[in-house]
Amino acid sequence: MPTTKTDRVAIKISDDVVRVRQLTRALSVEVGLSLVDQTKIVTASSELARNTLDYGGGGEVTAEIVEQGGRRGVRLTFEDKGPGIADIEQALKDGFTSGKGMGLGLGGAKRLCNEFSIDSRPGEGTKVTIARWK
Amino acid sequence: MDRIPILKFGNALLVTIQVDMHDRLATALEEDLTSKIVAHNSRGVLIDISALEIVDSFIGRMLDNIAAVSRILDADTVVVGMRPAVAITLVELGLSLTGVKTALNVERGMALIHDRLAGSEADDADDQD
Ligand SMILES: Nc1ncnc2c1ncn2[C@@H]1O[C@H](COP(=O)(O)OP(=O)(O)OP(=O)(O)O)[C@@H](O)[C@H]1O
Ligand SMILES: [Mg+2]
Image 1 (cartoon, rainbow over the protein chains, first blue to last red):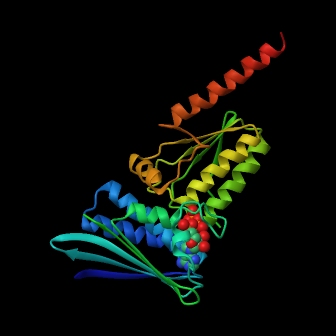
Image 2: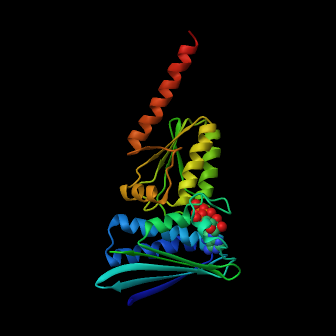
Image 3: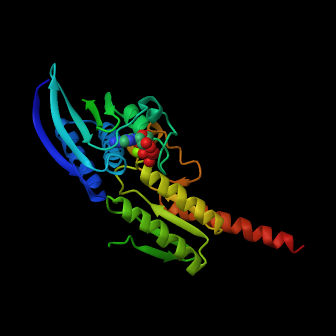
């Protein structure tokens, strides 16, 4: 899948979550996503950035504009070297939280995007990738 | 640290969120509102989110918390001006905001608060019969 543009943002403090939202918005506009689709992927990016910060102990996001078969989209990859997720199925369930959240972030991000994948190993870290296509 | 301004408007408080809030700012707003409700004996809180481009689970929880706390303090919370794209996204995210009253704009939100106040004053009058 060719990538036409790549940006990286470190996620270390809560202002970085705002920065991730803004970058996601800018790329979504550039790709020409509809307003509703922009709002969906920006919301998903906010959820995942906050998880990276709160549970992953910080990390970074790689934001790309991707092209496939004439279609363009925005793809975001969140990576941290935190504690990882032992039970991914449980983490994806609405309402499951190990903190003070509502347990909506992961499941919600999955519903809000066209593509969602998660790769996590206890003790090694977590990588979550989402994409939204025009 | 920055704070979001809270305006007193008759017996209600009005908050207009105009920035993309980071989490600490949202938490500070929750605390500031709670103390202002008590300080001014406010009966309503109007939160204008028409400038907000997204509401994620953190801000959603903040709105829910403000509504729950103000209810205990005998004030009504009305969230006004939610953008249609935000509303669509919230539902898909799974946030129903069941505890939060909403209105299309500030005028209608104010009317909701006044209706409720008028209703409770009528009840008080009934009690005296
Ligand atoms: N990057 C991560 N590293 C380690 N654990 C994670 C990570 N992301 C999510 N988790 C785990 O998955 C759980 C569910 O995450 P999810 O985002 O769905 O809910 P939450 O963050 O707890 O609450 P909400 O997002 O509604 O505020 C978290 O409580 C946490 O235990
Ligand atoms: Mg979360």
